Every structure is written in structure tokens, then in C-alpha cells.
Length: 266
Image (cartoon, rainbow, N blue to C red; front, side):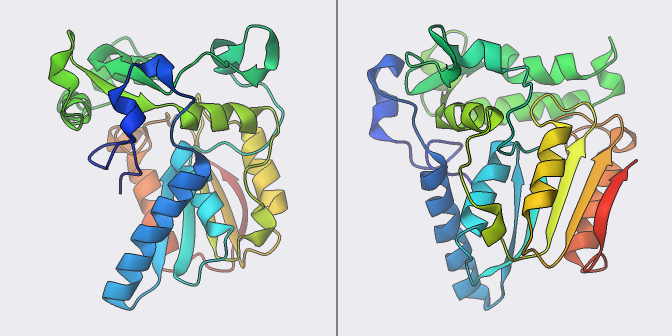
């Protein structure tokens, strides 16, 4: 699903204005509201509970939703997600207010623009190989950037084409990185799988440990660190983490890991 402001979903009207005319758009609460709407619709249609997976900011959005203790949620999967830990975060220096390094940039605006190069830049720098095709299929990278740009009907009006991205997720991620809580993990009461790529630039090992500690009411918690995997592990080649991630995900969803708890860094 696409939460408001992202992909093919409805965009806040402020995104049709210059980017500096609003505060950061689309908060964690709004994203959790949208997840709730979709899950309730699916559960009503299928008469089954729904598992939710969140990648990066999608992870803390999913946690915020799960902390509402929804009756329609069956399992929670987090991939490369931040948690409320005041620890080093490599993106903080680019996002903090120049007058207060513990606060998000108050002049950041409501959204940002990303062209093809911007969409691929972090992925490129994450891959420890000069030849990026060793790590990912070139056609996958091309489809990722092309479909992302095509999701914004205004992209072709700019040169180069670019997608509008609401930056509420950056403000909330910044707050998480300095230890500000956005949800109560103790209120999450479903089996939870937490996966991190060893080469991820977004989440930190401390996030896994703290979240594992705070998920005191989850029936089971499984933590997996995939060695050599990047932030984009689900789009990389199978031998660079994708096969392991898919295996962990499907095994967890089938319930074979229910009741297991621990940390497997391999």
C-alpha cells in the first residue's frame, strides 16, 4: 500500500504548492491511520487477520499502528527500521537545525524532490562494489527508478523528471534517532520479526537490541541480521541477501518460527 503523499495514493494539497510553504508533510500518526484503513478493509473482505511488513520508515509506521492493539493484525515484520535510541546516525548531520543539532531542520519544508540519480544514490553507495550489477540486476534498478518517477503525475513537468516526496518521515526518523519515542512497543501484542541488513545505512544495531528489549508483550520476537545485505536487500540479487530475507519472511509467516526468540547474526 501507499500511504498518503506516496506512490499512487492521494497527495496532501500542500504538495501542489512550493515545497517551502508548509511544515513536513505526512506524520507517523497519519501513516498509521492509513495502514489501519487498509488492514480493516482487507480483514473485512477476507475474514482473515492481516500481517503487516514495514521497510525503513514503513517499520516505525507499522509499529505505531500495531501499538494501537488492532484486532485485525496477526504478525508484524520490520525491515531496516529505526527505533527510539539516542545513538549515532549518519543522516543526522544533513537533517539537523543549524542552531540546534538535536532538532530537525525547521526550514526543511513540506516535501522534497528526487530525480533518478537521487533515488539510486544511497543504493549505489551502499553496494561495496564498483560494478553495481554484481549486486543487483540493472533492470531492477531501472524499474525501481522509472516506476517511482511515474507514480508522480507531475514528474515530467520538471527537468530532469523528479518525484515529490513528503518529508514527515525524515522528521520522525530524526526524532527516533535522538531517542524520541513515537509509539509504545510494550503495546505490540503480535509475533514480530525484525530483520536488518548488515550494510544498512538507515537502521542501527542498537535499534534491534532496544526494540527486542521493549517488546515485552509480543508472544515471540525473532531478530535476524543478514550479513552483507544492504538497505535494499529485497531488491538485490538472491545471493546478496534477498534469498535469505524471503526465506525468513515466508518461514515466519507460515508460523514455523512462532515461539522462537533470539538474535541470529548470520
